[in-house]
Length: 108
Image (cartoon, rainbow, N blue to C red):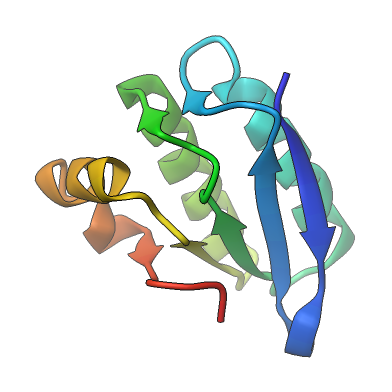
């Protein structure tokens, strides 16, 4: 079961996905529930999701992240993903999700 390791450097929230190497239909909802808990606490949340341990992302997980991002934007927040492995980055690009969710090179 994935968990989030959360830190708050320089006014943004960094949430590192831990405990799994694949985000898929079986665990994407639990990750999004954890993210919603963070976003419920702070309006205008600037969130960076660290995917450094994640090797694969399914279409179901991408869909969940897009829905979460839209919800976050509605509350004046922003989502970006950082430390994305090459295969996952390629998936974001091929599916045009990098237009919906900002893909950043490192946790910054």
